[in-house]
Amino acid sequence: MALPAYETFTGTPTNVADRTGWATVVGAATVFSGGAIAEASVACLRWSGDTFANNQYALCTSVASGANTDQGAGVCVRAQSGANSYYFVRFHTSRIKTGIMNAGTETVWDTSVSTRTAGYVLRLEISGTAITSFYNGTQIYTTTDSTFSSGSAGIAFNGYNYADIIDNWEGGDIGAAAGHPTMLRWQGIPGMKYTGRKGW
Image 1 (cartoon, rainbow, N blue to C red):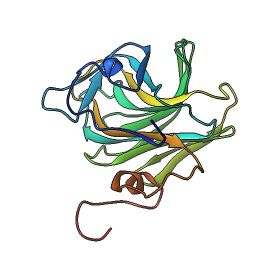
Image 2: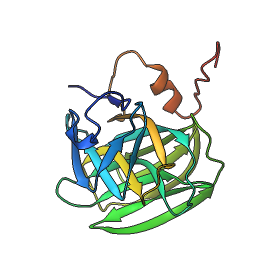
Image 3: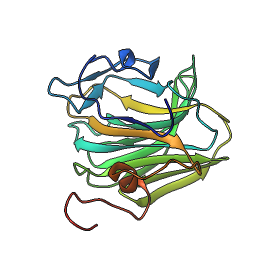
Image 4: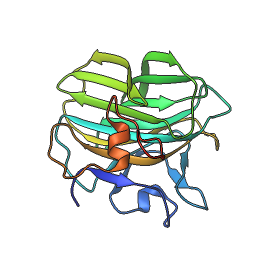
């Protein structure tokens, strides 16, 4: 395998932890029958198929909004192996939360009010101690934290809700040459957005 890593959550197995390249940090995530959608209980899974540089990112697209704003689905960076610890950003019904999970204790640093729209991209990146979250190419929050110096990108969930679902995950190193960009990668770069139509 080679970074950046991609997952469209199609096909089998339906348990994400059983799919090639994934490992459980805590909890479990499944793929809906019909494909291309991931959902979970309180959970975090990291991409274990490759070794990430310390400066890394993760992104995903929104599929639908959840019925409970205290539950959500999103991505994480510097997820730790063998510990429920990582930085996260998650979609909720009408807001986006950015924060840290440290040994099972969650701290939310920022709650941004935003309409959750299907197909919009949620991105989290960390470079050194700088942590920045983006919603569809627009920066929504930035801070610094030195709790975790390394780890893996992945997916993160809070609470069980079939409506809190994501798709089209990607994780990679920041600043690494990664060949030709895909539509998904362009969509996740701040300031760039692919609409699915001709043009941008």
